[in-house]
Image (tube, rainbow, N blue to C red; front, side, top):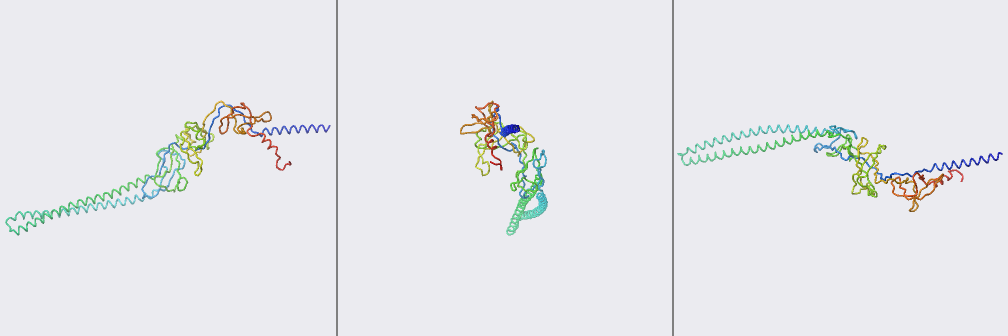
Length: 414
């Protein structure tokens, strides 16, 4: 009696053991189902958000005499600004020094001008007085000449010579005045030019002082540019040259994403294709976009890489507070769609030569079934023949899993 109970117990234990093992095997094989619907042929690429239009705020153009521009105040990177807000301020010390020097030079030049005018007036008055003396002497010599009718020939000759001498003196006095006036006009012109230069330099210095505070002409998000010399974004204390781009103010109302498509896949891309754009930082948000342009020339994927890629511009159909320039995004370009087809996960398909097959679930096991496949995307493939909707298929080789399970564990007797 005890022997029967023991035998039955062992049989029951073995049965339960095999059932448990069978369940374990089935649970360890991941399965998928044959689905029916629309299969999208797509391509995934990473890109970066950019503004279609962006305003560059550059370092002000100033004279070389004020040296390099040094940043003393700077807006925070990514800060939202309004029209009229101050974005950047440069060190004014050299410009203020230039203003003091220009004011001093202008004051000296004006004082020299006044002294020169006074001296010119005095010189001219002296020459005119000399001219008047020469004119009177000429008149006296003329009168004597006219009254010398009854004088001797020698006396007449003497009077004539004195008149000639007076003519020459009068003409010379007149020429001296004319020449002096010409010289004085040139002196005034040169001094006026000098004063104008100092005035212009002073005005330039004041204008430069105003330029050292850069304000934004429009609202937007301030994106700080990189300093070529350091490789980092500009910061307080950095120096830069006039005209160097310092801040970008992108127009956030119209955005784009630029992706690089492998030369093998670029032929599949055409203008107008629908795109789903998903920011990496906000993976729960998806935005619609459209392929806007495809580059005609390929570029190297990386600096030294021989792999060629084509830049493709995707225009976003909407704007959002979470979409900011510089964000990395995943772009799903929908190349085509096939409606009303059966499709299965691509992982389920096995190949032998030019034939394809899957492991279809049958009862507690799997049958190897040959199938005919069609087009595929990165995840699914169309099933033309061999399966029907709802069939369950293994995503891995179930027999390979079974073989793996039967291998003895480490330390277990063979």
